[in-house]
Image 1 (spheres, rainbow, N blue to C red):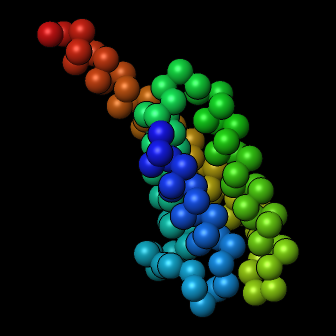
Image 2 (image 1 turned 30 degrees about the horizontal axis):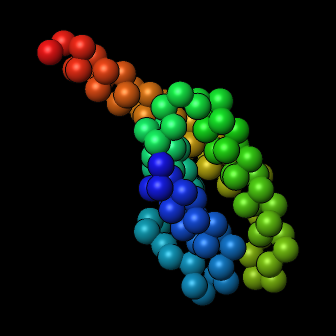
Amino acid sequence: MVIGWLTLAFIAFATLSPIRDRPSFAADPHVEHFAAFAVMALAFVVGYPRRAMLVVLLVVFSAFTLEAMQLLTPDRHGHLADAFFKVAGGLAGIGAGHLLLLLVLRNQSGR
């Protein structure tokens, strides 16, 4: 659960910091957006396994809110396409998290 919140905080920093301070891990920013939100969402699903709707709302809300907040910074810009890549990554992370939980439960019940 802490990992999800720390990941969201890092994403917020990377999204809202001045462009020169923005960490970059991939050549394509859309890959970064997708991957960051996938990791965050997976961490939230594992941390809050019975709160699926809350995790979905958190992913969608944070993606669109962070993109909108970029419009308030002097050297950043928010794009709807970026928000959609973030949401897509988040939904992929949610799916992966639920699959992981399913596999863990199946493995525990098979003992």
